[in-house]
Length: 114
Length: 113
Image (tube, rainbow over all chains, first blue to last red; front, side):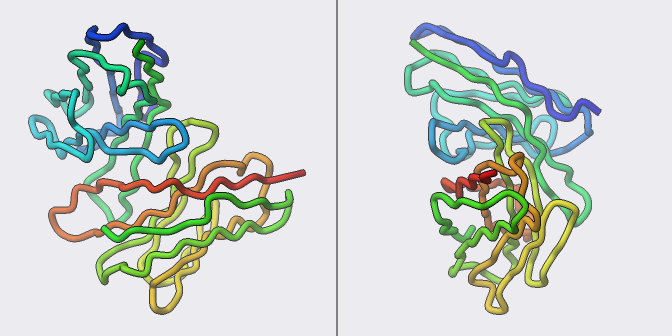
């Protein structure tokens, strides 16, 4: 299994541009999450999904949108990039079944908005 | 989910045990203690979790006090590769829980040769 994969690894955007951060998992996990991490800080939850077709807001959803049309994919959309969205973005997934429910994280996407 | 308090940084000599404390004085009965670590800006990695009994796996041991208000993560023989930020997170396993993790700032563990 590749686990959780994210593309791109790095991206520089100009203010006002839009882009989609891709996240794919091959573990057939129901739950998927998007976090952002600002320098020196812990991760903050942006959006999450409990299954295909179901998404919900986390702590910091403003400026982002998500969709979940398949179990495998959970893309994050930035419509009008702002400097405040400069951050590292992590996608994660989790299995619904079983007592252990750790999250598996991808390697991250480093985004700079200038 | 209960908040946690961790020291911002700790040092440990290579080969010695690293003991990382965490306070979670407002933890409730159905909340578990989870530990993750993040090595050099990679994605966080799950280490261990527990409810009230001590737990051990191939990576670490978790000691939870009897009143459950604090816990200690133990890396028995720290190596340079264990240098990372360690996050203690408390969250419930109750019905309808979505598994969301609330990260604090964690403890930066520096393992020194």
